[in-house]
Length: 92
Image 1 (cartoon, rainbow, N blue to C red):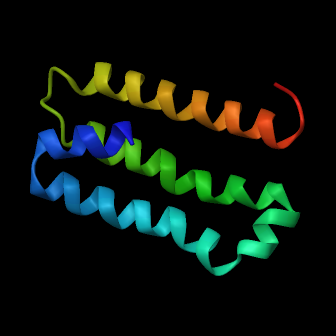
Image 2 (spheres, rainbow, N blue to C red):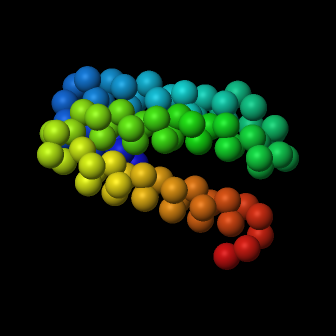
């Protein structure tokens, strides 16, 4: 969600790329719902689209901001993935 909000700030091209990558991230969950419910390791393949979304948004940022926005968005993405994976495995 942070990546989509940042994409809105950086223009139409960033929003278009962000929406494409969000759809590609969510599509396997929608198509293979039972598979993802039983085998939670399949979501790791979808992480590629989440990380790509962060990269695309950071690329469309202003040149001086790219590094800081990339660090912030990647940090949020990795933290949410770790938290979600921990919850799915029964810890935290």
